[in-house]
Image 1 (cartoon, helix red, strand yellow):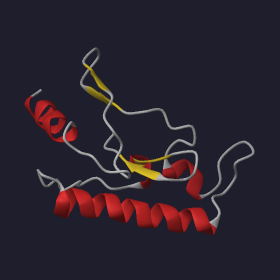
Image 2 (tube, rainbow, N blue to C red):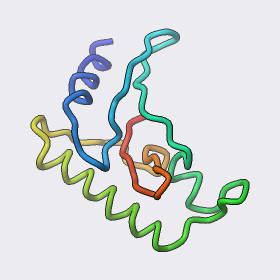
Image 3 (tube, helix red, strand yellow):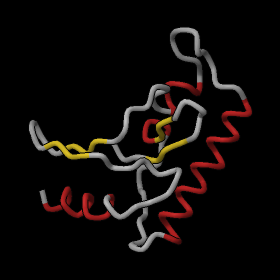
Length: 107
């Protein structure tokens, strides 16, 4: 619980377009951070083709995700009031907005 509260304390102060905004917490069945719904899901589902009509991500979208994720990480590591080292950057922790704008999370 102590590490969860510490993470929560960091998450509420983060403000960047490429870092997912925390919208709530859940304590039932464990500790959970709640982020906005992402219709496109996470990056790992889109990299190699998903089910349905979306298919594989176009290269322009991949480039946009790479730049946005780098911008979000640079903010967390260098410009955030309380510097944060993410430590778990992976495609499953990058949500995608409808326009393929990346949102860093820590699921």
